[in-house]
Amino acid sequence: MLNGKVVFITGGTGSFGNCFVDQVLARYRPERLIVYSRDEFKQFQMRSRLAKYDGVMRYVIGDVRDADRLSRAMRGADYVVHAAALKQVPACEYNPEEAVRTNIHGAMHVIEAALDAGVKRVAALSTDKAVNPVSLYGGTKLVSDKLFIAANAGGPGGTRFSVVRYGNVAGSRGSVIPRFRALAASGAAELPITGLEMTRFWISLEEGVELVLRALGSSAGGETFVAKLPSFKVTDLAEAVLPGCAKREVGLREGEKLHEVMITREDAPHTLEYQGHFVIYPRLSWWTPERVLPGGRPVPRDFVYSSGTNESRLTVEELRQRLRSVPEC
Image (cartoon, rainbow, N blue to C red):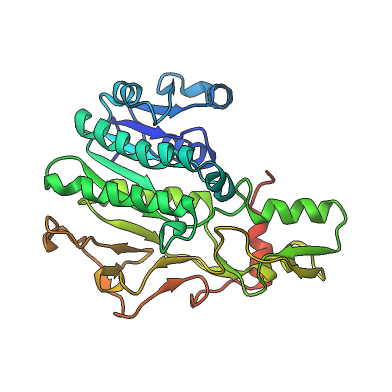
């Protein structure tokens, strides 16, 4: 799929971006792989780590807020992955204008640049927080998702846009695993739990990249790809990190949910289940059933995909085993 093609990724020096670049270089032979991001030091680190790929890699300093810069950088691209975003919930709550400029205006700029450049397919990363959002971050990502889906209104044959949705990546910066590990390493005997009934989905960076590659390879335009994942109780994660620890309930933070929801009951009538993922299809006038990807089966009409009710649940021992493959931040 990506052999001989030009691949472009926004936010390419982040955790996802690094994993995506590694996977593409290992599995394909792209003509060029363009990393577009704001952080010159992270680009220097990536360039140093991937020095043997200098003939393929291109590193472009730029911000998705800058429409002109983005448009110039994307010229000639065949496939685009949009991973750039402001993601920290508290930071977005305190800096709402910045979240809107990056997550909403930036999405619009990516869409416009891709259309102007004649890109084949675009996959935009989303989040569970965009589903029934209670935080500004979730609200901006909901708008972003709607923009990318609506960008397909021009009909088949042009640029195809899709959305890829999953929750917090295991071990990502600012998430619960590094926090628990840091407390355990400091000699703590108890770990703080925002809610004793709290659950989350488990996804690795590699699994996230795999779903994005699947979207780039199969999208007909307008789909929301949702990862099919196991879930876990946060209290079980605490036990896996620090066996026998006390667990202190501290309450939900602003914009935080007790459970992650990926598919709502309202989306269920338009959702098909595939072997390793779900696809939510749009309910818009331009969308036609001929765009449905083969191999799926309808979910029950009252289906809700939530970490709290998910049938696939990790045990403490299974969590402990998975933690061994999660690198230290």
